[in-house]
Image (cartoon, rainbow, N blue to C red; front, side):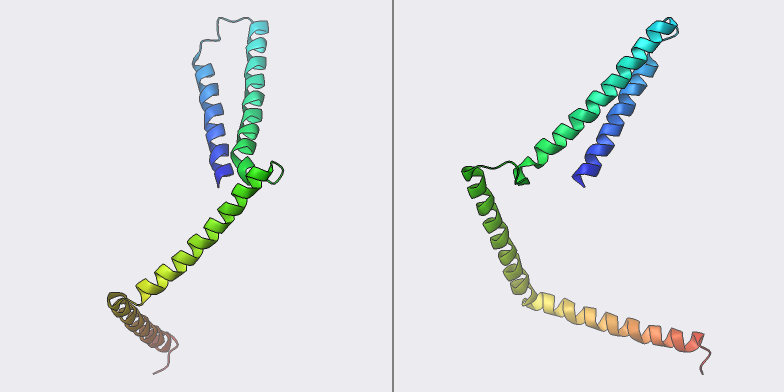
Length: 132
């Protein structure tokens, strides 16, 4: 998702830069000057693409095993522990909330709604199927 976001951002940046360049009056330039400016714009686009690749690599480096040291690995291990602990806490929280009377009433209402929807579905199927 991040990659998609940055790709869209890069495209907008390139379009914006190209739009700004188009907004300039190139009609006064000679043909060799226009070619030179077009070359600069093409080079600029390549530089921005390379910069985007580097930015992506840098932003994802924290999770890339290629970049490591004992201190980094200790932090990654702690990160995994915290993720596990967070997951366990979320499960406990859901279980406790599910046990609350207000939620049990909502669950009963849900079951009733689902039962009613099933009954209506059967009626529709029966009528649409041409059965009396």
